[in-house]
Image (cartoon, rainbow, N blue to C red; front, side, top):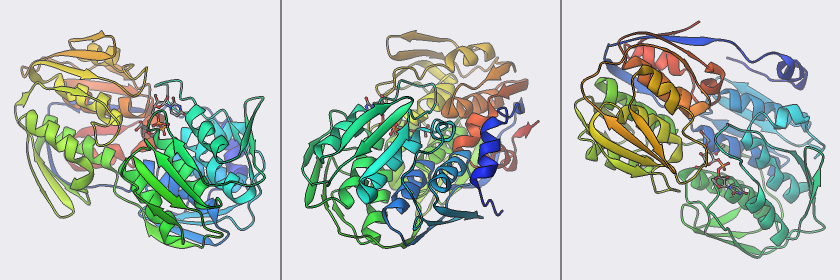
Length: 435
Ligand code: EPZ
């Protein structure tokens, strides 16, 4: 598919109403077969931003076809960059890029648009970003990003509906993050990559997507060590060059299908999955009594009776917050009381009222969900509404575990983060379609 996205189309896109599509499922069947894991959404978005660090062409392979990638493409083109998306290959060239204000209606569409701050500041010594949007899972402030940029010598001025950042020169220094923010770590990696001297990030995020970004920048001629740990050292380069790079597989999609297999399997083979990125997910599956085999480049998971567990989300290598809704949906069918505590976002239980429409017995206490699970499944289909990307995936799996027909609206949220989730589930034998 050639999706050469241009700003004009995007201008119209931002005016078109959100698609009122829905997903219709008929539950009760089991899933069997193979599913190919796509490239990682939360890795490809920072890599696209990092392409702004050079005026050479950057080629990114294994890029997932997601709405968030299309929006990031329109941000890139709104900066007068050139971008093509053909199949799963992105070709980005930011030779003609100007750090002018990107239309707010584009910037607020995804949180990741705030990742242009670091590269534009590094290359042009100025950047303007909007009040970046994102899901309804929390306030999503930028204070850690800004504190780090100011430590490098930048000034950040609030504007109506956004921020303007500028610097005479960015100079490397020690930066202590008050929380291991993924986005702030990524923005600071990119800003430090072209700063003068050495920058050391302390209490940095250690997610695998950070390692992918560091490897991408190192392949551009950068000098970053320690990515994947809490202490990252960046020696600023004078210039960075173009690169061809293959983005890592999506560990959250991997976790989604592992949990789908645990709940609805049969037996599912996840092709292209990287077991090293999902060790904590696999240890939770073991505690749940789920059988799986992981070998080079694939993981096979087997459905069966599930045991209750207690999990709390945490920065990597802890249990990822993005899988919290999906795990909760699965634990509704695990025998006994499970508890999931959400430690990262302040408002990520929006989906629970929707699960209750199917028959879930869940109580919220502070930042924890107390789930009374049962392997007897007397759930019946219902009309459900997704409130964010991962909640949408949770509702799809929950609906497929309920007898009868369910309808799920908010499909546009799911399209932001999963490439063809409906098609992949249908090919595994699920009775599911988009209308
Ligand atoms: C990234 O968001 C991911 N998005 C999120 O995935 C993921 O849930 C999150 O990391 C945590 O793993 C992308 O990578 C595009 P954070 P990000 O900065 O960078 C607070 C999905 O479903 N914080 O690590 O925005 C913040 O409020 C999405 O794929 C500050 O207080 O997450 C939150 O409570 C959802 N000040 C916590 O830190 C700041 O300056 C974690 O946020 C920045 C963040």
